[in-house]
Image 1 (cartoon, each protein chain N blue to C red):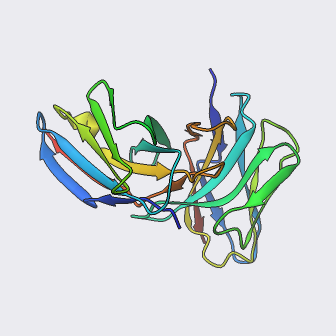
Image 2 (tube, rainbow over the protein chains, first blue to last red):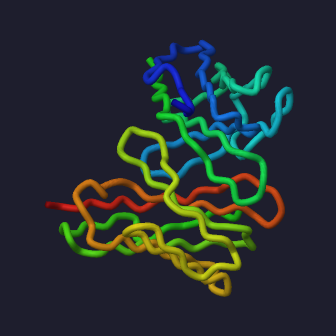
Length: 113
Length: 111
């Protein structure tokens, strides 16, 4: 089955701790994205990558970091610098042409202990 | 920001009725897309309409686009309880850019 897999589904972070959210895709997509969703809000872009070993900041990159060492994988680290990390995090992938649609994972709910 | 804004924020209807959601945006676009999200899940792509198209159909979905008014509408005909979800519009900008999402419309379809 082709798709995009996020893990874990639920994650808890302690004060001062860094946590990493996993995102893997087998759709052979070049572009991958991380979005944050707060209750009743739309999606806000954290980081995106159009090709391996390259990525760009989105609208709310502060307190987050990413890597893109493999085409299939785009992990997101929520650092201790992110003071309000509680949110639903969504990973997506797509081709890199015009008029591409996004394929989303099922999300990770991050909460602070 | 070229964020789309959906209207209404919430919509409650009975099964069999039609549901209409609207989206407004701010800048020129290549395309506008609609996505659906069930509670606690990822988004699923529904339909894409290009800037040179005015109307598009997919099953019970009908999307219109008016670039002069920078607005779009999503019509779901003969709604079902299973259509209960949040619906988001997303826009890109002219040239290559990432998608920007609105805050969504929550649709509740009662049996």
